[in-house]
Image (cartoon, rainbow, N blue to C red; front, side, top):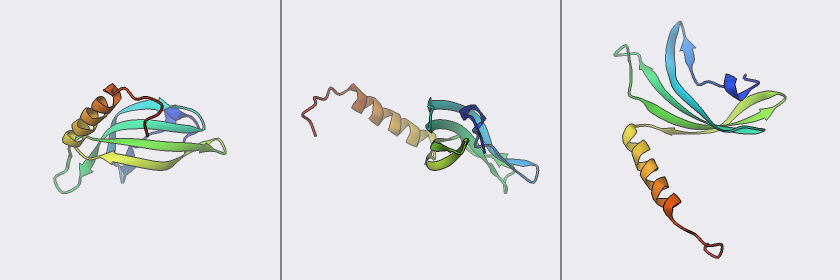
Length: 101
């Protein structure tokens, strides 16, 4: 387990093969709860190549000086990522008042 946010990774090696290859990582929040976003690829065992780029948003909780995974949301394709970006861009451009529910 990681004791700092910088040590957190989703890269995974099984039998000498990197089955989850981490391409990039961004720390969105730090503290007792940390939120990180990853760009990664899975190893396709049948084709013996890495698959398409995917993305994941993950939350970790620090307990007993170790960060432990608590939740994750995987974005399975660039198309899905673009849809999420478009929606968030639209929503964040709206002006809301405190009385709106």
